[in-house]
Image (cartoon, rainbow, N blue to C red):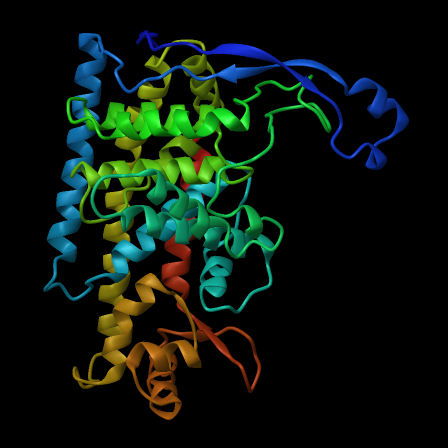
Length: 407
């Protein structure tokens, strides 16, 4: 593979002093080893960066941009305001992208567990954490107007507000030093040490100014903004997921992807090593690898995203066929698109979705069970949960395909 360099300002660093924060919790050896001088990143400004893309990379970016626009147009044609599906398809694509983003950080959950978490029917920690990422993505694509410091803080708050351990950090910049890689309880041996916390606000203001520019290819802008965000590492936790949510906010704000959430993180997931190496190259002064990773991920996401939509539309058609003979104006038909977005339901969810009482909701569920569309998943007489196995199978197969592509 040809390596194309795209110069970007490289990091400088500053010397800072470190001593253990909680020495009573460390071994004597660790207390003796920890104090010392370390180097923290000084992140260069990029708001005025002059971009010079080689012709080959420019063509690659154009191709990937066109692929994103085409699949967004496909989604618009299938999911327009008058379409039978309406909003459920964008909802499940958003959830799929959130799960892929989490997998990059080795946080995995099944489509079943994530759907259970959405109706508060699971205690699985991974599923509830990934659901937080769903909320962050929802906030990202819900940003109206230009992206601001506040909108980025809102994304982070949505990500961590339900995290029992990190809720106090939700929606605010970190106030301590963090580091990436080994180092135990200090940054002296870390692979990368982001800037000191006092340098975060001006660095983030510069990033927001960069995002506001209108003279850059959108995919290049999203890739570089993401890499700069990860370098600043402005939060105590959740930087990776918030940074990937930021990508979707940029694609939407710039008008490249308007209808749906194309699963770009699934494309990055196919080669996690190259993704992290590209972030390292960016910090060393070369934006070429991270731009290449995003163009590759965009093409992968466009192809597989369209396949996923086709398969989910096929599942909807099969469910419609199974309901042949049932009155079209019944609440049972109303539930079918909902099962694309939420393939696991309980009685409370269905009643709320239909805006009716639980007796009517249960009647609709019973019809779907009789027609083989829903399966009861608990074996209980009370507090039952039902699942749509076909949709769950399609979603799990999509996740598996991204992981297999990276092997």
